[in-house]
Image 1 (tube, chains in turn purple, red, yellow, blue):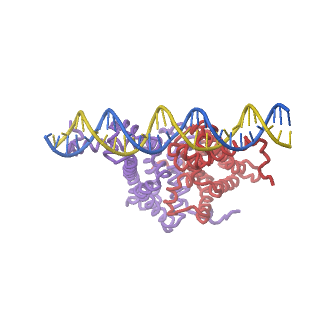
Image 2 (cartoon, protein in one colour):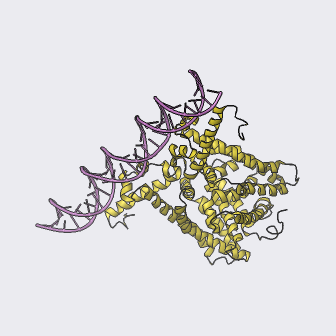
Image 3 (spheres, protein in one colour):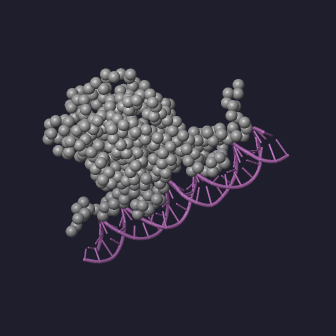
Length: 231
Length: 231
DNA sequence: CCATTAAGATCGATCGATTGATCTAATTTC
DNA sequence: GAAATTAGATCAATCGATCGATCTTAATGG
């Protein structure tokens, strides 16, 4: 039963990869839970099940381990968003509106269907306010492609340029209405009087999200955006 | 011209109040910038222009200073949201839809018209993920009243019960679409390709927000919420 | 009215504990 | 046995907290 010895060409290399993976996983979870300064290198090593010196040996130091955690979660997020952006760039439904509907549903599924712990989400939130530079890498790699694909389809649907700020703003509102339910978890749960996000709650959310797409994202601007001024 | 000697009945009390205020202001700014564990008590004291021992003397310790900062910013936020919830509870426009439109504009003005530094917003974000208990106090005091007033008017407009999750969910989406532009600042700026939130950008936002209210918040559910299933 | 005393508030120095980093010796793999 | 990797011990630096001394203000006595 050598279930995971396929890539094990070298025993040292495997041990190295495993130790690094354990440390990165511990880093994402613990940095996400408490923030960079709230976690000590000893706690990280204990959680990862390795010695304290392994951090310095494999990454150079605490800061470099954090960077590796950012790169790791960026790659993971890229995999998630690729599922969605592929929907938007597929040929299947020719109608942009239909593609948008499906893509938003797929995005919703990615955000609420996975089993990533909340600490991973918190890690991303902390990144954006603690280390904007690190967040920049993450955003460009994982979220920019999705945003671009969304803007292209939305612009086609509205028959305007994808560079119009109206288009990008709509895309932001639509996507982050969903995203904020995870990034802003505490406020969201309190707002709805919920204590958890179980399957029952997620089903309710999905219905509203569908409505949201039609309203905020795809509805033609018509007269309500320019006609009423501010009277 | 004794502009601020009205309440100064006691010299000691005044010195105490001033020192406490300086420490709390420094705490909000520095905790917001870097998080609880990223800031040392020495840095806090330096920023506040007081001695290190003043923290223990006036608050008991670093943790208690943080709690005092939460209470302070909660009271401040309560003042901001009261401006908006008053709009929703006023008699002036009898039409709930019109009250909602005005209130959302007022909320937008509160969020983008003030001169509170971004570190204050970050303080709130950190609260929600670092100390949910502290955030609970803050939410109940400052945001719950606004949310309730919003739900009441929205329910009246849609002719349903304010307890319907559809109503609360709509209110969340509408309000947090705006709020997330500040709490999720880095992603928002990158999404729009902006580098700052100046008056020009805020003017653009206001137009879209107006549209958002009509679309996501006040538009009748019609057939798109229940009719299409998930085909 | 001024001098004296008590209380309130601040400050610099220092405590033990913990931090990230480093070093050495032991273990594992080839 | 040589190289790679790990664990345990230890480093200087910094952490939050505490102490006594100093300064400011309020209250008291003459």
